[in-house]
Amino acid sequence: MPIDQSLVGREFPPTDPYPVTSVKLREFADATGAAYDDKLAPPTFPIVVAFEAMNGFLADVEVDLHRIVHGEQRFAYQRPVRVGDLLTATLTVDSLRQIGGNDILGTTSLVTDVDGALVCTTKATLIHRGEDS
Amino acid sequence: MNEFEAREFRVTRTDLVRYAGASGDFNPIHWSERTATEVGLPGVIAHGMFTMALAARAVEDWAGGPGRVVEFGCKFTNPVLVPDDDQGVVIRVEGTPSAGEDGLFTIKLEVTCNGTKVLGMPKAVVRG
Image (cartoon, rainbow over all chains, first blue to last red; front, side, top):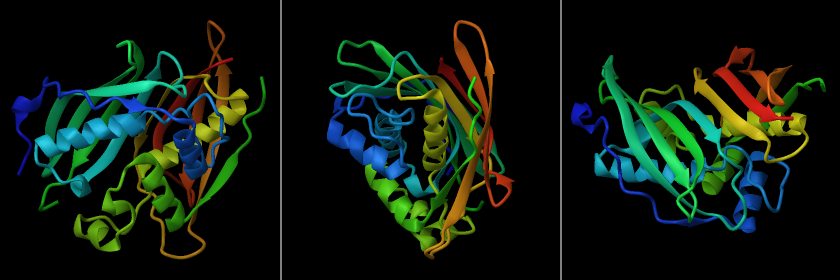
């Protein structure tokens, strides 16, 4: 079932605050082979909170994660993510178009810290593969 | 300006499982052949974000440390198929840095697997 066009412009509730710990940074660095730094996160780390926001969004619109393929990802950083940060991601649907039975969703998730200051803007294009594609 | 040294990273199914755990992305298309083929993929594919993380690793190494990336983006143009064996696949990251204004450098990347570009227009902007 295609995703409804009325979603465009909708902002979803922020994710629960996510505490960035050195243990988590080590786990993420180990998994990606990055040099572990005990204070600063690797550049793609904000995806951890952005992904939570996406999961909340998918549950809300009743789309299965396994039908989603990542089409594009952009990060713009105000500052690096640091150990001790308490991060929240808020997802907005920017665009939606249907091509060949697939939904192409443009989303923006703003990652903010405990003071509400912007840490990172993440933009993702998600391809929702239709049942018949 | 330092030369951007080409890097190669071997990726196996084990790496995908480890990345799933670390990132929280448990989409079964990254570990289940059955689910991947069911949704029309040729087989289990790497997380696009995993490939992007490998590219980021090469970028940070070039920049000389963490916390210097200002912008980073790409399209996921071709899936990285990861076979269920010990060899996996090799992802190659090459980059061409150029100096811009305000002490920023732009690195145009080329990320390939078996000679095929897997990321579309990958680009990073880093602070010098």
